[in-house]
Length: 480
Ligand code: D5M
Ligand code: FE
Ligand code: ZN
Figure 1 (cartoon, rainbow, N blue to C red):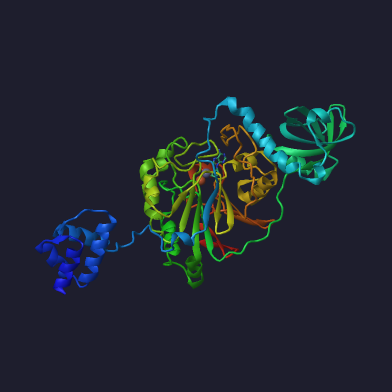
Figure 2 (figure 1 turned 90 degrees about the vertical axis):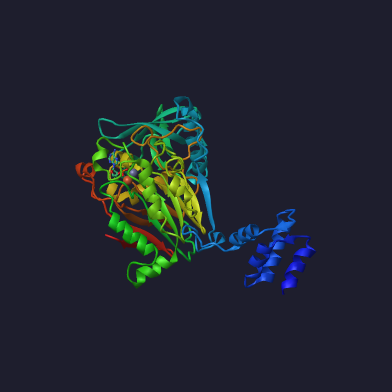
């Protein structure tokens, strides 16, 4: 045995000093250790001729399998079929300056024109300038400009394309059409069939790009949806959130709930992870954590307890991000500790991700404020109807220049180009769910109780209720 060891090293022309020899010899598996030591030396290309005890110790330390750090997932990386399909974080070329205005709108127009021109009703679509000279029935695609009512309460608006503008009249006798027209908003791109009377177009059909009915996908896992955690706020429901974390880890809930937890593979967070600072006047008084870095440190501490799920985080209007949409992913500068977690993916708002075949469109939902204000019948309480409307319009924030700051990029990234399986939003702090044409429309509510601001606006949040898409069916888990 002893000679075997010395011979092994002698063969490799390496001398062992006494201490090193004793160190190796004292190990249970001294021969195997000698072999791996020698192959390590060869592998590293070291020209070692004298092996000391220090070197043996160093090798032993290196080769001891380390305890897995908690953030490393039990699931191997290859167990996740995850891709970020659309992310604008690195595609933002402008600082939102006015000179890019025209290319931004041209991009919006052309993307939606592409979708509309494939419709049967718009087979003979013409540029507005040509339509102005055509007889009788015309088909055009225009951006809605100016919406008004005539004295007799007909709807009157202007539509525009790159070639010209046209006035559009929707008669209130035509109830269905009038209802459709009531859902039109400024800056949206719409298809119109109508008959031309001079410079006026009498609409007979208004056509949205819409979405086709999609087939439901097989799902052998669960995905959890969160938003509006508002960490750092004095109204953040910490105890409820702890219960949620415990449930995720299999330590909370009845048997059925724990079964669901065991299936969870993805956790998607659609913005407002923290309450932020200086988001509204007097916010200071409503903050428990008044430092933005500390707010994200706390987020990392809580998220860090989740080990075997992939966490996808998009920002919201309270996060430390550019406010104008598309919002790039959370900057590492602010959320450094979250970036240390190996199982977190950072995406822009909006973004599209693939989670094992389930295409998920993530959007915080700032534009809901504008739509709720503008369109009759839309409100914060029924964001599912707003989501349906946005899908029909194929745009996440059609109204330009209201509360939703939009960056005038060269390209309009808020057009919904791909039809998702899941459309996940937040912002309104009120849960909603609807399945529309096979698409799961999810609003994931909040972990923040009613704020002073919300009291004034009579917004009553639904708190600590977490939607889980469990093997294709929706479950709402309550932690309050
Ligand atoms: O939004 C929290 C809640 O407040 C949510 O229901 C939307 C609503 N909200 C936020 N800003 C406005 C404005 N400007 N008008 C009307 N309603 C609003 P959060 O993003 O968490 O502050
Ligand atoms: Fe929020
Ligand atoms: Zn928000």
